[in-house]
Length: 316
Image (cartoon, rainbow, N blue to C red; front, side, top):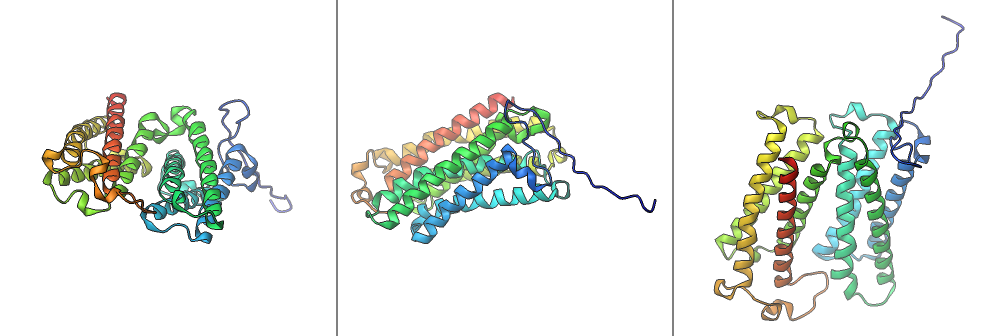
């Protein structure tokens, strides 16, 4: 009726998770930034932006390893900006994404990206720098990378502690394992960016094929959950998960045998120790020698095999 003023109210839904953390859902209001999760997201934004800004200003990101670290910080920053923008404008329902799964998936990836950068960047890059202002900038970037890693890990821990019907599949243990498995595969691809590491033997090419197949299968599971498309499968989703993880366990088992055999056994033209690899005789900044790359891939293969075995046990 005319003459009656209209009022608009904003309703905030909260879930009590643990003492002192009474609001972990950002609603379409700027005041939500003062809630625990909002403050945490601001810390994530500031720490990642400072990390890549310092590296860019100093020009300290040449080479594949430096580029990976820069990408990691930029990716984490961009994902947090997108999540904050969507939540503050209240457009979660307008997207064809499962908002129960999307933020925690991005946070899981950000933890791993920032953690890897906090390790790879100082070992392969900062270690070889001269003691000048560029090195100081790089060290500060590492500090902010560590801060962002803790901030994202805190968000993942908070989300993981929520009830299953609220948090979604990607906040469960098996969901986080999927993120971890795909990320380890990305690190393996980073070390295999030189074709000479696998082109000389068909068995090593098979190893690369296994990494690609398992990565694709794992990403399919993640994308099905993010896109709320698990019902389109011709078989029940839990059955698909069990079969997929079992296949990955079998494939990775072949790699854990073939990769060390053909790279570290002299009978298969491999290098049994680091001293026998001439590429490791000299220290090169921004790069990793062949033997170190082969060892890193072997270790990461073992880590991913254990992850898939654990995933299979929990999903079966």
